[in-house]
Image 1: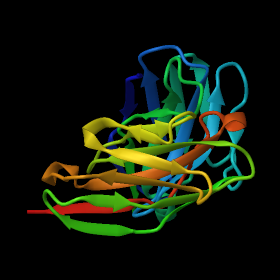
Image 2: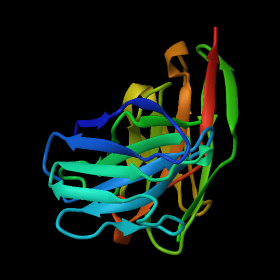
Image 3: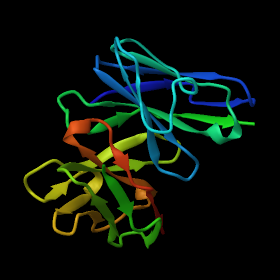
Image 4: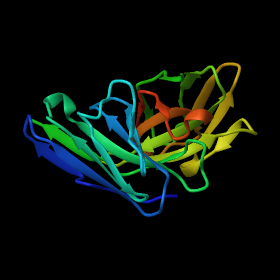
Length: 116
Length: 114
């Protein structure tokens, strides 16, 4: 298993501002994944963060809006830029479990953003 | 590409009754299947997974699921639910070539009533 800590757990932001979410894992992992869960909806993968290379974004998500950093094997940040009310969501950091290279994911508790 | 359909958005059930949460999937490649649970204001945690082998898999908290390849289904069951099982349940699929990049269903809200 993996223990994942996210900060902030929740925040209320003003339109047009940016917010950076931090994700810390208790073990070294190759890939970290950022998901978005919009109110009452399922999870959508935003991007995959690999240490030492550019993040890989899924269709519909772009680096200018969601820049990601991955400075080492235990830490990543996701920035939500120029926020609008449509960005109000829970943002979840996840990793594959150690010895579990087959898609099983462990999640942080999420960062609940409300944009006014 | 994979897709997941959870056939019930909400399932109300009385305590100690059995429950089944239905999940169908589609994929052009072999997939791995998962059920996750999300309690209020928490992240997701794995309930159970099917990778290969026996089609009946058992998970935590007394849940089990059966993989049916011909019907492309992976329904979740519990013979007797508790109030504490009230949560959102997500079915997910992942292809081996996209390790970690799971596709999630829309979720089923299970509400257990006393």
